[in-house]
Each structure stands twice: as C-alpha cells, then as structure tokens.
Image (cartoon, rainbow, N blue to C red; front, side, top):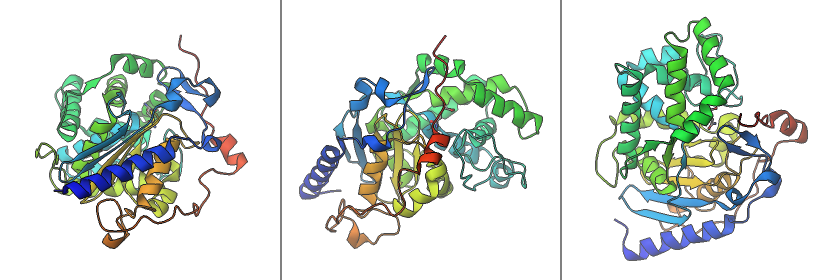
Length: 362
Ligand code: GLN
C-alpha cells in the first residue's frame, strides 16, 4: 500500500503529466475517428480535441485520475486484448497458435495481409487476427459468446456494468466493408468457417463496449497484477494468460509502430481508434489514457506522448531498473529525451498511411 507521501507524489506526478500534455502536438495530428463517419480531418474536430484523461491503477488497488476520467468511450481495438485472452482460456495454446500467430505484421491494423507461410493472420492485435480469436471464443450462441466477452471485461474493470453502446455498434456495422471483406476472404482461404455475418457482428459488438478511462486503467492493472483485479481481488483469468497476452501486446499492440514502441516506451500496450490506450507495467501499474486525436498510425497523439514520458522520464520502461522508477519508487524524473526514431514518419509515408475518409453516414 502506498503511504500518504507516496500517494501525494503519485498524484503530483500525474497532474504534472496531464498539464504538460494538455497542449496537443498538432504537427502529428492526422485525424479523428467516429463510428459510421470514419476518419475525419482535425480541422473538423470540435470539443473532442480537448477531451483528455490519464488514469493510473496500482497493483495495490489504488486509483489516480486526471482530466475526463469518467467520460465513456468505445474500446474499439483495445477489445482485441480480451478476445485473445478468452480464446487462450477456451482452447489449447497450440490450437490458438495454429489459427493466429504472434508476429508483428509491420502493417496497418486493417491490412488484408496474412502470414502466407503459416496460413494464418500475423497476430491477434490486427483486425484479421482478432476476427479469428473472436471465432475461437466458445459459447452456444453469438449472444452467449458476447456475454462471456463482456463478463471478462467486467471482471477486469471491476466497476460496472459494462455495456455495448448500441449506437456505436450500428454505426460500426454500417461502415464495416473492410472487416467484412477480410472475414470473407479468410473464410474462402479456410482460415475461418461458420457464419461471417454473426462473427462480424460479435467482433463489432466487442469493439463498441463503452468504458471510462478509470475503468481502462483498472483493466490494465488486472494484467499488471497477474490477471487478478487489484481493486476487487477477483481473478479474471489463469495466471499464465497475463504472460501470453502481454507478450503479444508488447510486440504487436501499437500497430505498425509496434517495434518503435517496444524500443522507446517499453510497456505492453494496446490502442484503439477511439483514442484510448491501455498500457501495463507488469507487477506495478495499469495505465489508461484517452484522447481522441490520432496520429498516422491510428494511435492517440496525447496517449502516445504520455506513455513515452511515463516510460522514459519517469523510468517505467520494462527494462529500466527499479531505481529509475520515479512514479512508484525513489527514482528522480529524468529529462524528456528526444525520440530516437521520428514519431512522425516522412511525408510520403504519411500520405500513404493517411486513413481514408469514410463515406458520410447514410
Ligand atoms: N472497429 C474498428 C475496426 O474494426 C476498430 C479499429 C481500431 O480501433 N483500430 O476497424
């Protein structure tokens, strides 16, 4: 348990972090995303550009919040973590691995590319892989499978109930051409079988679950704490699942920027196009950040910056020593280092990666 002095230090560091990143790095802002509308340019953003929260949950069950900590947003791709965890819990490891790999794809999250050599999607953190892990979740009906996925999210978040935002879901469903195409192609290639429309609906339901940033931090802390929710004490999954899930988040969680992320930030993390990032410092802390402005990879600009600083300046990189930990331990905050590799890719890549602006909602 953190004593009063520790709690005061953690709160002070968190507030400092929040204030420092309120001003968004506009040069890296590529788009915003809204369900049904798709990506839209920053110039069209309204109050969403000010939305920002950072929350921390320690493995002792303490929660620290800054900013819009209780505003709900859709999990989107962060839900892939839970579908993968449940697929692992429901199946033998070799069966899961035969259907979906653990290799970073180096491509965008919605790329229609596969690991041809092994005839499977590259990993569970890209859309193709998540469609497969969703298919691996057991249950007698799609409704029961969704209940099980929601049940797991619920135990991890502790404070509920968590629900699917039906408006988000119906909008996602109306703009699902690419996911639908991916799923049908995989079925044609025998990477999937069964009803594609049911699977797509289940996948998009889980993407549309609403959480607050504080809940996101507790979900992260559950993985930091070996799959036991540190606030409620409830076990969400068997212990080995934390290792498997965190390894894949570490190497594949941040889309095509995942290698750079692992090198410089060094904490397993998963982002979603709603602007959320769930990050895990194993044995110590769960981090939730939410801010909807996205970079060219589809990661939250403020979210990425906060995680860089937590890892680097505050010494929480998984390969940093305990004496460097300036958040929970005795380390002294360092200077913010210049990013080793540019966080904003070169102009041609940027053009190439610019997410397409989806048709307006019809
Ligand atoms: N629902 C979105 C999709 O499946 C989620 C994408 C994301 O958050 N990266 O394309």
